[in-house]
Length: 263
Image (spheres, one colour):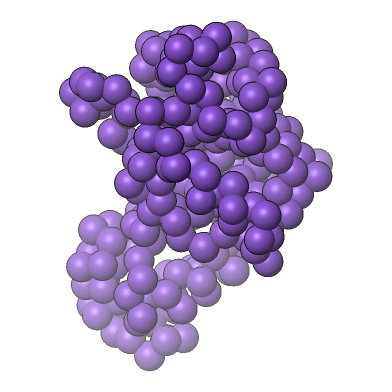
């Protein structure tokens, strides 16, 4: 449910184009798709979240932040409303469009320096930080280091689509990741031929069914690793793998770490 006070704060973000806007909050409310004229850094303290854009779903684990470029429609959801969501909306500088970092949506690790700077920015909570102020210099320093310290985005993001025939299929896959899903079984459930289903995945999301299934399972696995006490064998089983080694190898290929290293 959307909070009217929170909606007002969202409206304030773009009121002064040259300012930075700081917002630290305990979010208990859902926002639909929206966008800003400012680039957005959001850090969910101690929690796990998902960032949704019109064409992708991004997994935001603990100790990572999300970068949303200006003008990108998005919303995000997280599991623990009691945790702080810390957001900085940055002014646009001449030359930002020449730096690939500022134009690409991504999830990046938060090192100790950046974490301390994000926490310190709460000093200007729910305020416009204006050019010429001490706070502005501090926020500019954060923005200036982001491209240099954010070299390794989290490699997993999950394509999505608003296509009416595909949405129930994707929902079904997400709800049944522990099952031995195949083109044949899903085609039978939704009365599609394997050929039609293959074509739908390619035409609506530019990805194969098997690639989508693998990414969906790894995204689910990362959530289990960070949010539950399940051991790796249980997580492998709950994401549709009957072999821990196959699960671990797939995880490593996609994430760059073994499941035991991701904890």
